[in-house]
Length: 374
Image 1 (cartoon, rainbow, N blue to C red):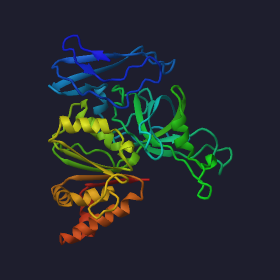
Image 2: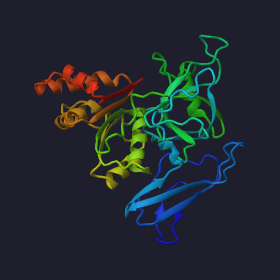
Image 3: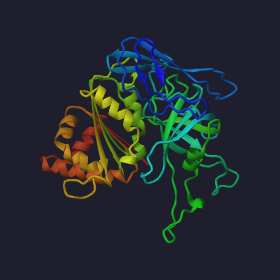
Image 4: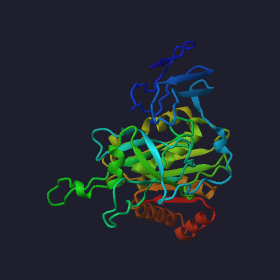
């Protein structure tokens, strides 16, 4: 626990002396001073080629209870176009695992990990883009060839969780296959890449391609815009990046609009990055809204399980009004989430006397509609 000599307030940043030091969730819940606080982090031996003896996290405090974190290098703001496919599958970049942390509770179905990867500034990206991961070993369908690339939405801002532009974070659910007859796990059919990443240890090497994708980039031409984000499970990844950029980092642009996150998971133990989102809610109540759909714990108004589309229906009048006013809407998660959401939106549109097909066409034409499902 670190203390400021001036103000004697605590900043809950995990401090560990080993290389499993984690900073995937940043908790600063009681900052009440008005100057600048720097916390010197323990050394991490990431790679011989880079001998930074300390990680420094600096927080510039804007208001009494709201700390924003200083980031560097600000030259990452200069590019006019997003970086694309710097490293391709035939010649991927070899990065290093910094940390792997299970981020769900014991009652969550399945395991989800937050994985911090050190790219040493060689694989820059923008919020909303994806990295490709090439797991080790050979492709069983093409003996002698590497595995196919698996794409993962990046869960950090361009500055990474260490705020220095040298790391990227992924949110990965371990894919486990259970035999329908015996009910037992069959490791031979488990997801190759997700298990490799969730089993990785600090210092392990990982082959990365990309970055890729433009559809989920966060438009910043209008800093008063509304951004409605709908994610299920690990689909929250790009939204974590957006929200850290909007509310956590001290960047040249100042977001003054509304960010509204709908997150669908099974239960409370399955919530991802909930402490970060809850903090934004208390610090920026006028700029952030956060609605959770917990399918195994909550009921919708018809008495069934609560899914994200039920939450959308609950707020449908407001959502449609915001879309009419130019709001951006984003969807990220398993592709199975979209039919239920589309059905709900279509039904709501018809109840309002509108054609959903025409409305959707207009949203796409106006570049307000952003979908990334897998």
